Amino acid sequence: FLKMESMQKTGSFKVRGACSKVNSLSAEERKRGVITASAGNHAQGVAFSAMKKKIPCKIIMPRSASPAKVAATKSYGAEVILSGNTYEETWKVADSISHESGYVMIHAFDDPLVICGQGTIGLELLEDMHRFDKIYVPIGGGGLASGVAIAVKAKRPEVKIIGVESNQFPAMKNSISSG
Image (cartoon, rainbow, N blue to C red; front, side, top):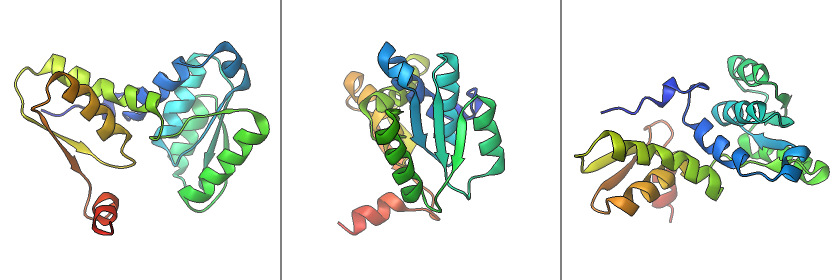
């Protein structure tokens, strides 16, 4: 069974976490606007979520971001600023603007509400499939894997959650290997 998150409006599961965070904002936070750093999928999720709530939105993307992802993000009404060559550089720019302007930062994976939003995938799996003993879930920053694990394990602790990543970008494997 495949959970086809590529069929989401923005083409990725990232919209779930972005919507969860944006929907939690107070009226005062909505007035200030939201900001994030992303190379694409999270950017589109935040921009789409902000557009739906009519919230000002800035997205900082690395200069190397895909032109298609930049265009898609702009199509949701976000102001896109291309800055930095790496995610870390881009994140520092977004963080600085957030502190200077008061925009609410929406982290791509290191936020409990974003993780909760990603966890809705696990809840849907529990509704859609009554018999399964394993879930294979991609590991990037860990928000998706964490959300799915929390949601599924709360109801079905016996289910194994198995994180996967590509051989070309084995960040989690490398992190564990290096201690």
